[in-house]
Image (tube, rainbow, N blue to C red):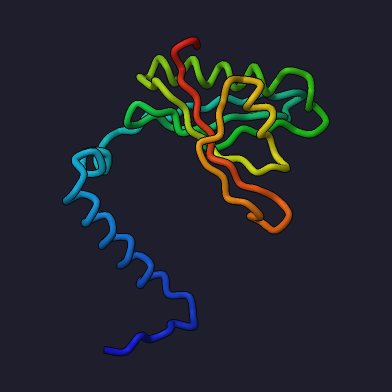
Length: 145
């Protein structure tokens, strides 16, 4: 058997690998199997000003976790409290949907200290990713939301 390098991106091959990994996960984890066909609730909020979106939040709730995927505030509105209000609204809604914990990722040049101010803790870090920065996975219990 030889290892063959594929030099041109091959979406069909990538899909093949995804299907095989999902089948393996489904065989070994009832949670993975159940989530494949579940209606996963999403949490979405936006803030508009003069018809323009200036901030927003998006995530989903599954396995008792709020997977906070995106929280963005336009730089012109940083420090106004919009991010805090969005985060709190997202946490409240996730709690209603059954989440007891939150997970998110952020870079050192993004919002690590913002999340720490709101009770998030670093669960893991990749140093120098990208070079000169760090990549954090952060979590929080939602018991006080």
